[in-house]
Amino acid sequence: RLLPAIEKFSKICIILTSPDEICFMLTPAESENVFLSVRLLNYLVFERGELRCESKADNTIGLTVDVPLLTRVLHNAISHRAQRCLIKLSQKAPASSLNSESNQSEPPHEVRPVLVCVATGPSCSLSHDLPLLAPPLARGPLDHLRALRDSTELCHFYVDLGSILEATCAMIERMRSLGDELEIATSQTGEFFLSLASPGISLGSHSRGLQVIPQDQTVSESTAAASGIDRSMMSDDQLRSLIEAGYCNCELLSLRSLIKAFQAATQLRPQKVLFGIHPQRRAHILLMFQKTEGDSFSADINVEIGLPIIVEHQG
Image 1: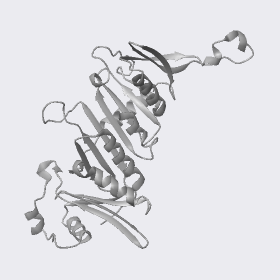
Image 2: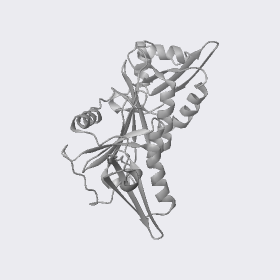
Image 3: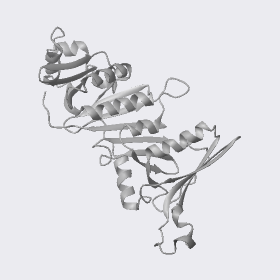
Image 4: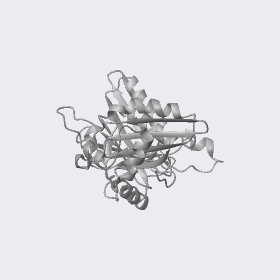
């Protein structure tokens, strides 16, 4: 489910591999100003003790891959019921340059980096050469990406959209034909607002009763009422009151980017979808996955999506 979810944003992905984890990254330059990071501990991807990752950059290797092509290679292995898939970084010359005698008049081809993927099983042995879109990253760009990956600044609070994700996806799909910009708001009272207005028509939704993370940032209904929040008012008036009371963040986002983010979240099927807003900077989505056993959440999978704020917006 991971690669098709990444492909919602871009056909190009950077994979950072180290002895401890593998990280799939999209930077704003490749994905319409959207940031995506999916970090997995290596035991979730590789057989324990089977990964060998060595480089002069703290044993971290950065590879730029074609997402649809990598997806096809892995799906092909699955469809042939392969039980093992060996992936190795190598250097190869293009096939047309291998026959040097028949190409004497042509200039020599440089070798190119490829991922050699060998899938084996009881009734199959498949080999694919997956060309990389660029040479492995040098130390400078690699350090920049690692700093970007590790520089997550959490929002003041988040609301959990897990229980309303499908309904929210359906709503923003209905909004697609009305415009490109969507007003979105989260509140410490556990509310989530969507609104889009175009000439002659407006469409929106207002969800309440959502969990606020961290819990100590929750504002109770009695506190909200004491601050002048009147629940008998229309949703727009309630939103304005929440903003005036300092309990709510409200910004404009790209409808297109939000649709992609929620579609990716739906495909990955997390147990929690935490949505927060850095005022005047970005929206931040964290996906949380439950462990196989028990009720706790896994720290071995870390998925975050950053969506840019379109313009400075005041409610």
